[in-house]
Image (cartoon, rainbow over all chains, first blue to last red; front, side):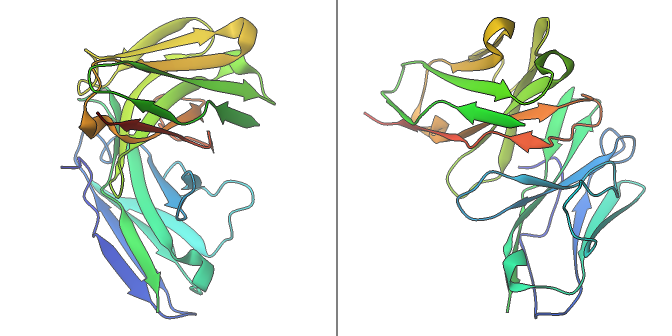
Length: 110
Length: 119
């Protein structure tokens, strides 16, 4: 069972906007920054969003992150077929003294 | 920046495995290295981290009795050893770089090492 809670799946059609939620607690999302990773099949995760809403160099601005209280969201606008992947949220947890991840959300582009 | 991991391993239950992660392209001593594993079809699971420069590893409670993370600054390589292997340890093991432990963001990852535990 994951410390951070994500929906197991999400879907959208090309061009649509999709959001993925991540729910935590005061010891992680509520007091620490949230990061999002994209994992394409058979590859290592890739940092997509860090520090709640910052994009690393090279990540398209179609991807955005937000946070409110103990929940965070990843939004993908102008959905493309290559966005089909698993998405994970992660954060440091002060109580566990370690990094915690969500269970992952499988995004399907219909 | 590159993190290059050692190759796939097949181990019997009860054995140990040691996976290496060789770093290049950045100042090795200024970053931490973490280990994250992913069982087939499962979520990411954090195992622990080490300050690449001076050591002082920290482990997840889920692994602290079985995992050892070490660093070799002369070889810019970090190692993760997992002992008393069981079938549930079959997974891809990743190393990942992190600048600030309290932000917990991993900006570069190794390619992953598949460890299969089978009798």
